Length: 438
Ligand code: 5CA
Image (tube, rainbow, N blue to C red; front, side):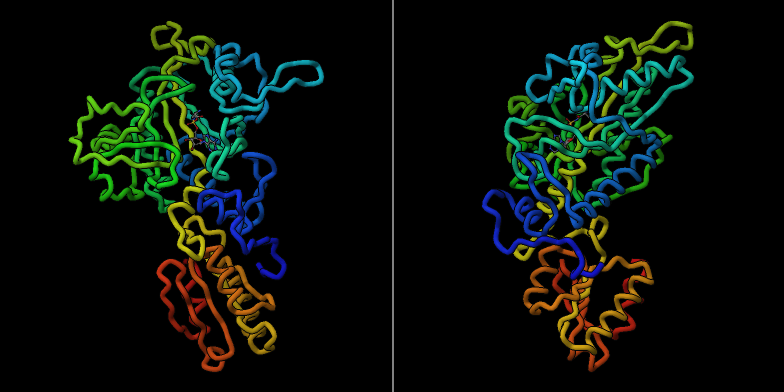
């Protein structure tokens, strides 16, 4: 993509409404614009990152055996009356009436809707287990939308729902999602610690939240100090095997949100305990028959009895993750994208757009990189080198190729790594080979 043609409305100044670094940088880097409180438009650069995050989430869901569907954003109120949550959900739910005065709502989550679909389609225990997910916009009329996409009112969530015959099967489904989440966040270069959590309006008695530790996090969390040195890598799991040992391993070190942390009964001695702030990027719930019993979602079991489905639900804050990634990856000059979620793999800077030779060489290199399948953002604008460096650092692509008259005379180009700041001169031809297929 040529920057001269790209819609990238950068801001020079820090927007006064943004209190945290990710919100500031998303606005300055032209990723999003606010539409109304907690509601954002995603501009080209931001949308690219959102899609990459969504892509990793989708791949890991598919790998675990979950199947993708797409449910609507607007739901009928009567479904929520069946579960008893219509009144309980309160002012956070956006309630709408259609032209026939039917009560509708903009979904804050989809337990009822999926339970109705499965209830009507599945009759026998032989059709179980099932795990269905979608990646869809949600609306929650949060009391205090803030911090940009971190606490939005409209936000993108991956949510899935597992259906099993019995509690043991449901725990296996829970474990599958638990380890899939470890992989998902690790692939984004994020350390998201699984913490024992309260179940809130979703319900149930087993739940974990996945938290990225950050001073700007909205949740208070407590964990064993050893978590600080523990790395979470994207290890391979056999989803058909017993995942309980993996679950136990990743829950053996204490970690809990402040809602359920009880100082009187904490298993970790005070000096070993860390109190910190966390960004909740995902949450998993096991709630048994909370929805299946009131909604009549039953199957015929092996003995011919009617058995209510055992369920769990599992959410990931896809749009929130974009903010969390920036909180975890930035410096004073701007964003530093991990390669797996970067909007482009490379930035190419032509330092002298007024110089025909530089333009020809940069155009040629741009063509070759694109031909090799490398995603490049090519700064071909007639701007000062300082402005170009600042823009490239701000948007945070993993590597920059910098071409100027001096290098060109020597047949070289400068490669700068955004994270380390390391610079190196490469023969121009070698630059294509270096980044092709990376
Ligand atoms: N139905 C369950 C799981 S599918 C559910 O709704 N869980 S949740 O309430 O925990 O939301 C799932 C994830 O969505 C959260 O972990 C968080 O990362 C994200 N999320 C929740 N509220 C917001 C919000 N207001 N803005 C941005 N992301 C949010």
